[in-house]
Length: 346
Image 1: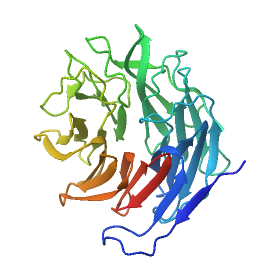
Image 2: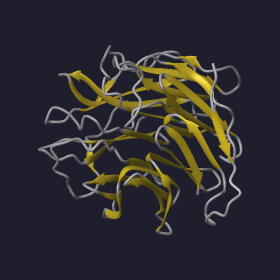
Image 3: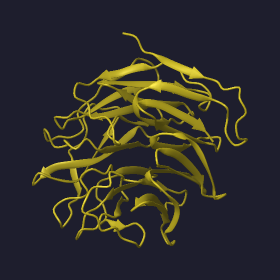
């Protein structure tokens, strides 16, 4: 097996707020996680294979690709693809095959390679839409949320968790079933963790409106609140926007979100008024402390906004951007451009 990749270290002049390094590799739907030691692991799909690359220098360079698994008929594209989360001692990758199975793969940071872990959904064929999210705490507990059709063959929000020292994911629980039978059927949910607080966001479907809602658990997923709406506006739409937006929790436990409504990008935080920040779609966001970054694409051009400075920059052509904040305070954005993965540090 051969893996073809190209690392480009640019010597040309670049804007002062960009570090002059860029990765170009064949693949789709990159996602990233940072462990407690600051090690970055970037996962992506290429055909029916899942790969992972590692950086120990805050994204200035990455290792060669390592194959996590080969998954026949893997969902890939349009926010469908492998997810990754890292805890203190483990990293977990999840991916969904088209038969509706959510597969998981575990890496022990102390040594050894990626190994198959248990399936996340405990109902065969229930995750056929291929849309899910994954997060982890420092205590080696992992949490997953996804679109699931076991309730009347309609997509609704399900949840499970796993302690990485065990082999089996916990029994699945229903977080939310829309009174209009299903949530938006092709928008990816999000999940984040803050201390014992697990927050799941998703695009709902109520009386023809497709707005972003979020549900909160104060006990690591044992129970969830009735979902609340993010922001105040609404989007009546008889189609799927294929855009689940982004979700974060700040250092005080306050929930924030960024998402697309019609052709615009909005940001909202609890006890604040929503505000339009750009025009575009494919929205992602990250928050660490008071630092907030939002990424999106418009006309297949990726941009990133530093919400604190209100300064946005265009960083290249592509779709499906994902933005993260590193331990050194810089942001890193990953995206896909014609089945090529790129990234920039901001």
